[in-house]
Amino acid sequence: MFSVVFPGQGSQKIGMIKDLYSKFDTIKQLFNDADDILEIPLKEIIFDGPDTKLNSTENTQPAIFLVSYCIFQIAKKEFNINLSKAKFFAGHSLGEYSALACADSLSFEETLKILKKRGKFMQEAMPDNQGAMLAVLGTGASAVEEILYKKKNEYECFIANDNSTQQVVVSGLDKDIDLFSNDLSSKKIKNIKLNVSAPFHCKYMRNASDKMKNFIDELNMKSPNVPIVSNVTAKEVISPNEIKTLLISQIEEKVRWLESVNYMIKMGVKNFIEIGPGKVLSGLIKRINKDVKVISINCEEDIINLKND
Image (cartoon, rainbow, N blue to C red; front, side):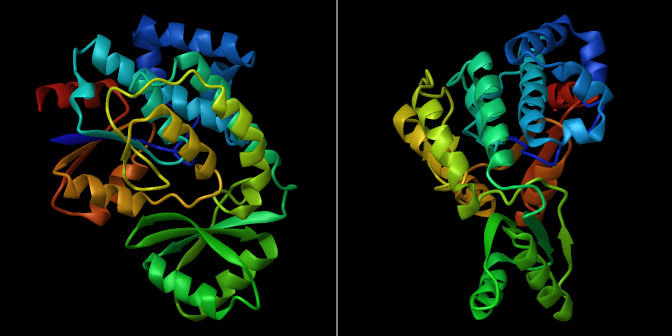
């Protein structure tokens, strides 16, 4: 029994999927369609950069989706791999939209358009350099929550991603993140400030979720052909109305990735396939449970190995 998972922001890199693009007309067509739909040179941004353009949230989100969706379609159409036999699909933050599109719940066009808006609104939710995010390494959410509670009168930060027992990402105002980072360093807890444009998945995204509500409500969404494990509830969902509600909440709520993976394992999943650029989720899942098998698919060799497995 297996689940398919789709990565979120931070997995992007210039030149991703270029080898598959050069070989398969299906991908060339999808890239051309994406440029036409979004009316921006997304292909050029993905292949040529610069980093500042690719890492701009309103470009990053549709770019990562496009790459994930292309890999999924190639595995299905060119290699006849039926990934829809999965027990669950799940995605990390924007990856949830990739999961929905690959589960035929959202169309390719609607997904690109809604992610462009999502990225834009999240980027604009707070002025540049006022918000920040910090990865806390080597410890889990309960220890982070304890520190934040003890220091609540000095600064206010929020768990944005509960990624594994050894990695938590925290959001907050830049000055608060710096104070929290100093406290962690004094306790010899490793932490890294992330190169992001805003403090995602916390109350500072309220403006973005308010703007997104009408657009998400208007989506022509169908029930997914594979149950989606929601970032917000860490449980499966198939009702379009419930999915829409959760997608709105997801912008402000923490990504419960650790709980999501444990839920899928509890429901019998023993194998995970990561579809998209990078291997971030594969690394997290291996840290969560060493007994499950995890493979990442982002080039032709990976797809061939999956087919022969």
